[in-house]
Length: 346
Image 1 (tube, rainbow, N blue to C red):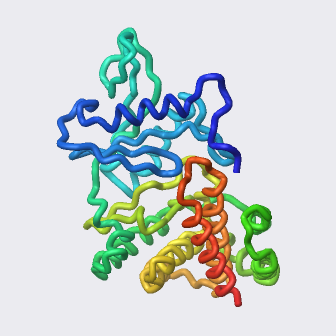
Image 2: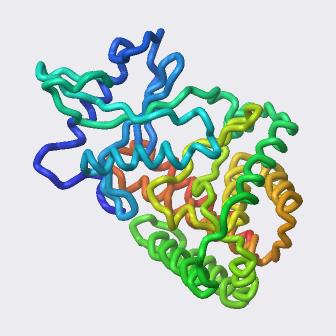
Image 3: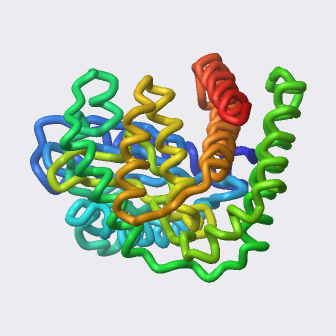
């Protein structure tokens, strides 16, 4: 992974610190709020008022996402709002400019006047974060009726989605490329992983693709490859009625162009990681019933192992970020994901 630092004379990360400090103040917003809660993710800062969430993109410079320029962040924000309308209707509202006035003071929205726009915020309606699937699993506070409703909601989304025009050869080639990219990252000696185990996992995944290629070609011929969510994790599923599924992956069309079974396999891995594999199985079962999809078990096994390796890779990427403090946590997460990846294909 490349450095998160954008290469330009002005230190955008120092500018980001100033913006964050401003947005953490309750008096910075055009609405009244009793407090501000700030949440930092790998790609953004989110600031919660009593009624809304304001998302500020970081000026990241990654091989899969470059947001160094103001225009890139604006376009990314607009894309995020557009893509999330189907799965989170009424949540993603609009973009708002962050303005530096002529007096050199920051201002959220309003007229630009003699100032200039220095960033863009995604304005969202707040949803009950304590009702996400992740939080409910952590509290052991599960309502299976809500879970089934969310599974039906995403299954209907998949059912209505248009098939993507891709050949079986191109799809399998893409999956093979993903497997090799995972291997290249995971086998870096600086991470200190068991390279023999990495080799075994890699070879098993490639063999699954090779000997089960007709099953993957069949997925394509049946029109199963669609533009899905792209990052379907428990923290993105709010068990409201109707459900809300946020943070659809906006920055890379290829990464959200996938097989729904791949996406649901990813969700199952994440639920298993939190101790609830049966929730992922519930989503998969309802998807099968809704779409009448006859799935080859080799396909599910591959997707689950591949996704586990991918999550291990993403965990290890945090070790390369100087801003991440608790690096041991991410190294342990990577090891757990790799254990999943190995066991699934055994």
